Structures are given as structure tokens and as C-alpha cells.
Image (tube, rainbow, N blue to C red; front, side, top):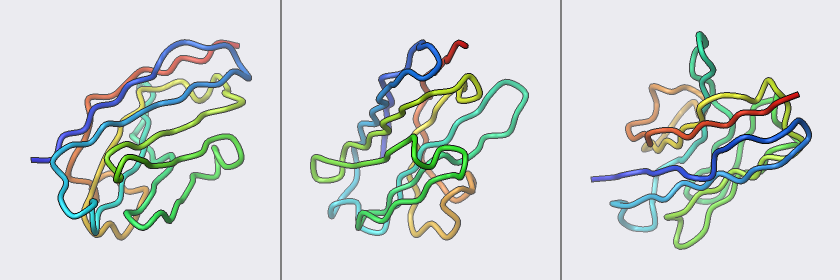
Length: 125
């Protein structure tokens, strides 16, 4: 069974940086066919896709974070990271790690079968 666990959230001032980590377990064959993504959800808002990375390394970013966030993977693709720089107050949300098989729309939450518990990121002005 695939399990995901996020870490690295916290509080930071505007223009600061944070790195989120997602530890994955239960994948076989180097996560073949699976996309991993970062989503975020602010209070009262829908969950939105932030960045995604395929098993072969292709990446995608939401327009709101392009040039500021970088997604990466390591350790036989069992670790995923989100380096966040130049953070803004509007980046404040709970950030979730997710994984899905043969994802068609990388920013659609229902495409992902596995989710972590989330980690809070708070950016103050």
C-alpha cells in the first residue's frame, strides 16, 4: 500500500523560503507510471495543484508559482521535494503530497489515489 508523509512546513515571513519533503513508501518498479504532485488548500477554498513531477522527471507548475517553486525527486523516486522561494502571504495553505497512476490532468485532485496528511505553510506579510 502506498503511503505518503509530508514534512517541512512552518511559518516564514514574506519573501522567505521553505522546503517541503514528501516521503513515499509502497511503490514498486521505481514508481513507474505514477505522477507525484503538490497541492494546497487555504481555508474556504478548493484544493489546487501547485506542481507535479512524473516518474520520468517531467515537471509542471501552476502559473502562480512558476519561477518561485521547484519540484524535484530523489532516492529512487521515493522522496519528493518542493523548494519554495520568494514566498507570499497568498501562498499560505495546507500543502499536500499526492500520487496517482497514469495521471491525465496533473492539477486535478481526483486523478490522484494517494494523499499525505498535509503540512501547514504560513507566510506573514
